[in-house]
Length: 119
Image (cartoon, rainbow, N blue to C red; front, side):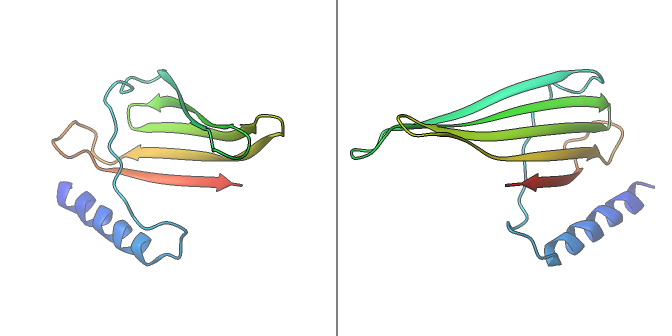
C-alpha cells in the first residue's frame, strides 16, 4: 500500500510539472503546531515601504488556517495595500486545501496542495 501511495504521489507531481501555471513547482515547509482537528491558526505578514520620493505604503497579508481533520487543512489568505495620502486597495485572495498523504508521521511528510486564487 505504501509503494502505491508513493507511486501516486510521483505521478501527481509529474503531471503537475507539465501543467501550465504561473509559478514553477516548489516545496513548502510547514510547522507541526496544527495537527489536531479543530485548531485555528491566524498569521499576519506585513511590509512597510518608504520611498525617497512618493508616499509610504503598507502591504499586508492575513492568513487563516483551520485544521478540519488530522489529514485535511484549509487556508484562506487575503492581501491588501494602503498608501498614505492616496488609497487603500484589495489585492487578492487565495484559498488552499492541504491533504496529508500518509496517516502517520514520517521523516518526510508528503502533502497534496490544491490552491485557488484571484486578483
